[in-house]
Amino acid sequence: MDKTLPLMLRARAKESPDTVIQYYKDKDGKYRSVTYRQFFEDVCYVASGLMELGVKRGDKVGLIADNRQEWMVTDFGIMSAGAVDVPRGCDTTTQELTYILSFTECDVVFAENQKQVEKILSCKSGIPSLKTLVSFDPVESEVERNALDQGVNIVYFDSLTAMGKKRENLHIGSTEAEMEKGDGEDLATIIFTSGTTGEPKGVMLLHRNFLCQLPHFILFFELKPGDIWLSMLPVWHVYERLMEYAIFYYTTSIAYSKPIGPILMEDMQAIRPHWMVSVPRVWEAIMDGINRKVKAQGALVKKLFDFAVYISMMFTYFKDLTFHLLPDFHGRFRALESVMGFFPWLLLLPIRGLFHVTIFNKIKRVFGGRFKAGISGGGSLPFKADLFFNSIGIRLQEGYGLTETAPLVSVRQYKRSRRGTIGQVLPNTEVKIINKKGREMQPGRNGIIFVKGAQVMKGYYQKPDLTAAVLDSEGWFNTGDIGMLTHNNELRITGREKDTIVLRGGENVEPVPIECKLRESPYIQQCMVAGQDQKFLAALVIPIQQAIMDFAEENSIPIVDYELLLQQPEINELISSEISEYVSSKNGFKSYEKINKFTLCARPFEAGKELSGKGELLRHKIMETYGKDINKLFK
Image 1 (tube, one colour):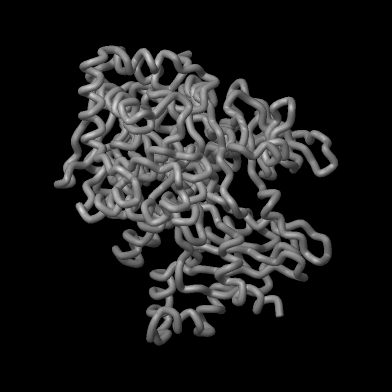
Image 2: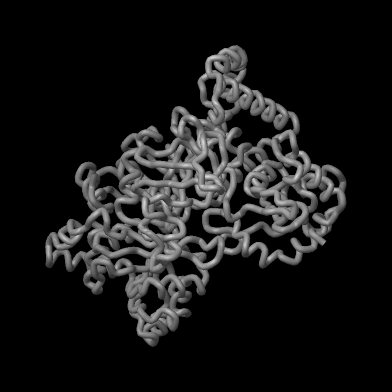
């Protein structure tokens, strides 16, 4: 195994120099391509340019940008120079930027565009170390003058690579010589957590933390050289970042898109990807979009489609029963289940085949026609979306991990994917489930998930006390997630230790499974369950606006504006009925887990405000914003 990520890249560039590594859009919106040879040359020029600017081994370099072609070039360039990148997205607040860039003492910072340059300059007084800003896009001359007045030099990305090329031509081989000094124990990056519980922590990840996972991907994904991945997630998040390293490790290609419905669908037709990495909310949005398009074709078409999906779900269940693809938490009678499942599966096989040819293939063509699977991570995939896609023939593989585990801990196998789990634990990774008394639990029993393996972080940057609180002397990392193992060493997440709600009666409630179940409703887009130290649970609910508007129109409810519509008794009765239907004893919920009261909100939660970049609820921020509304529910 290569010692560092840049050395891994160099090996692939030598093996397959003319294979396409990236597809990106030009100013006219047309896809252009870059080969492995070109990419590695650009990486060397960025590294050489940084060394010309005075960047030394071990220096911290800021990288404030969203996913784009230059991001990975810059990332590898920083690491090739022996430096450590400190990434963050464009939605980062000024306050967070000041903290992150000053805490890591960044002299050089990459910025995506003028807006980000101006944002960083506005907090220059709080970042005394800042000397150079490298902008991917042009900025106005007035901004350059303002930067110079503050002692900051603005360099354009193209100028940096030109500077690096000139230096490389004068000192041939110097960049690769610097690259070869690297070691797997070197710090590759410091990724600051999104701060779901307050001040962000800088997770220190080594080159080996990433590299140790890459050889195992072939056990879980059916990858072939030349496969194309469609990418639209924030690459500063460790989930997308690892996937992009894996794309390069297996000499496959990446095409950049955006998580915006029309753009994403258009790019799928243009690129015809084999794989796509995304978060649960994107898969939910695609599923809702498919259902809306079908509904627009008329009631008869919608009923036929729903029937086809229902039959396919039944077929999928009996297929899983027959071929041992249901999770085994408590010990299953596999032989008996195979007999029970075989005949219903065989009976439904030709019907499902008919629906596959006449209906579902049309949907698959929307994905480009050669789609192998989607990878879902960064949050819990709702069961409804999971079953929907897999039933109509679009495979989803769910994985689990954290920033602190770089991030992969488990992932479903391509050919033996068991829904109801987040996959099999990676080879050379240990997982144990510990209850509150510190006892290790058997499969099927809940507890806190602990992880040990080469992918576990070095620690939190300059926070030894916080590191010691989650990482013990033997290398076991406390994830803070609550879950259980199966007899096949697969994981299921059932909650989050810090999210656990304790009611006045002493009952412990995990809000995440309740929220996931509620989002299965065709009328509910987002929600947050509350009730700490209260007698009962309540919820903040954001409905799906179009679904509510359609319901109002179908039932002759007057529509003045959307916010007033949400106050109508009929709408509240509808949502109340949905909550009672989904959070019920028949779905496995206890009486104290039921939602007693709720309030409807018109505005969806947004990334950077109420949501983290990967879609997690920032509960403390939601409580700050909607505290009065939530408190009213408990009066």
